[in-house]
Image 1 (cartoon, helix red, strand yellow):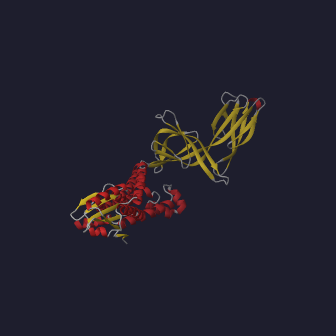
Image 2 (tube, rainbow, N blue to C red):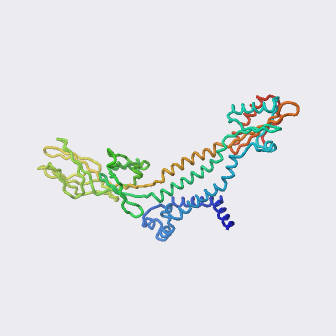
Image 3 (cartoon, rainbow, N blue to C red):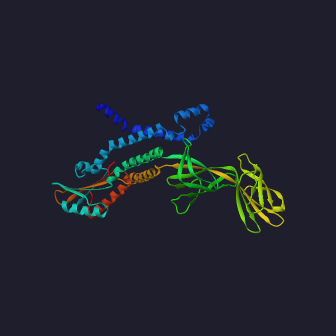
Length: 455
């Protein structure tokens, strides 16, 4: 039973397992990029054919990031990361908390950086002086151990940086937790919102069921701009949040990379689709009176309180349903009926015997809004920030250690052995070590007996 338990532990503690899972996740990410996610079954049949579409559905390649096997892979990677951390943490912790004064003289002589110098001072006096100049060069007060034949000093910087790799592991786990929270407690939805209309519900992409918003969202307008070559430059939709909890409505214009976020929901702009509804605005040029009408085609409309009526009788549309121009019959009192062609988003002037009217015409659009609720986003952001900080510590800081062993000379004075070691960023530490060597030569003038870097 113990052997079986050890085998299971070794399996989850394997670095090879981590590499394999990471490679699989990378391949899945590539597949998820190539195969558009969350579309209708008909889309995949049209794009890939019936057989491949059926295979994708069977393997859940069309919604892979919420599939059971993708979640299982993330869980396996998380367990592997935790077990690997537990397996290696005790050894690192011993390095952080070890008694660095319990070291043999031979080990000091064989370290990467070594320098020896002579002093005319006694062992105790030399040790006091070394402690002082180490403090002046930025080291904390050195630990000290007095022995019969020597004094050993030790100082270190950044011992805790050895634990930064575990902060990286923790940040990855936090990000994975955020992904899981978003997968299980979030959703993706949509709504078609015509200009000038409001909605208090959205619809889940998974099953089309309605979800109440708890407030009203109104589309005040939509605008599509183009580059000179005819390509779409920008989609822009003006939205208004009408919520009893707000003193005044909240207005926000959204574009592709600037969505609306409210009550944990994020509203992204999608495509817009033309409607067979039109905004006709009429202004009396003499009195300044103006009225706007939302009308369908082929319906008589009267301006209440006046003798003006009009009717959209014919539409000239392209293959996408976008109206290029419309024919309007306009009647004003006894002046009779006149017929006019007006372009979309244009204004014309209609003259009668006693007055004139400015008539503008615009087609309404229905804007597709894509909605995401992801409560895991703050967790992912926190994990990302933690990852950046811990990676910076990992790569920019190091564990630097300095030993100074001072032994009495047979005749008079003492001998100083300076040894140093670092776990990374060796070139920077070597420069600092040479600064300490220069300070020793300054404090204890005389020809050094040995100085060098072990290869």
